[in-house]
Image (cartoon, rainbow, N blue to C red):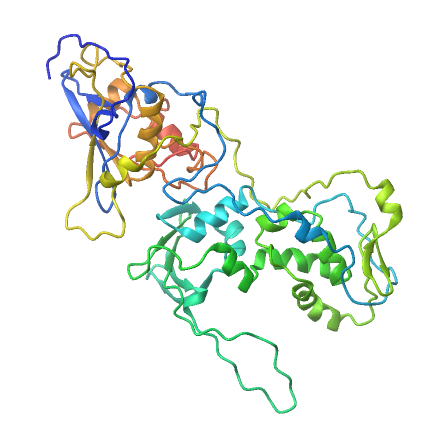
Length: 478
């Protein structure tokens, strides 16, 4: 490629994937191709120099900014619970004593303290289509809401104790057995399951150090997808995050039927926490142990509810007139708060990406050598910039979105030091739903790898790669 000034093409992005990413320039002015690769397998990804030139690129007009699927893992939050199913029964419960002993005065507060983006993140961790790296704090916050999916198999620890690997299998892979009970003791009504229905398996690797991380990934013998959907497992087993919210209300002395009614005042939050199939029996079971330990306590309904003989728990007439305040979530210092979405976040591509799939790597494939994707952008006369070392915008908004989608599907991006010196790129994924842009940890963020054999790259605070790593918007360069 010559070093003379190059023609610029402003036409729409081409069909071939190779022509939709950016080029690199070394100190001699030669165009160097950028490669994006996986850590296990070097992989292809399109990269756009122009979108890395500025710190902030606002979302392009015409593209919605609602959360979308990312690498087959981020889907629109589907199957909203039908409100009628939750609210059609005003009277729920069984007769119990109604002598007030506890009152929280929080009728206007939410019963749920759900962490951010819970419904979407539950789906991502359920599908686990790609390895997910998150912080220990995020893991401890979200894992209780998905622990009903998994059954622990075994654990391994390193000699130093810094790294622990826990292996889990899908709950439907393990059969259930009826145990023999002592004579005179009645067994619970429980369905038996043969097992082997789903062969999905994961490993959870915890590394504790200066920066503690948790990586969740499928194991080698796992199937690529579950044989059932998320709702199916929520119907079989309730998660401990949801049950802990119920337990907090039970220990305040409230009737299980009253807790059930209060939970169903917020059907969207209930479904987000995995409680679409929550029953009054579940709540009675949660409060049973506490009720045995505190037999003298008279259980009461929540404020705004009353017990009526023959009808159970119903809303009181006074609350129907005076209760106009909307429920506000309770504030808790223990709840993880994700940072505000940055202004340079990009919406997920709305155009079809099917033509890219043959070029994308698959973690399930076993290869002797890494999967490498060469990505660059050029004008119609095969030029990569106006002159050597000059930042030049060659591709449009669609190519930029495709570039970031490709980044999300690779483990690393390989570039030369010339590109770093000329462009100061961020080399992260800014699609909505990736780590630092509404997602967990550093999900779908590639690792920047810089080839610098002569040590020409001077590290400084203005380096975008380092800054994005510190801000949690990407991985540190390797």
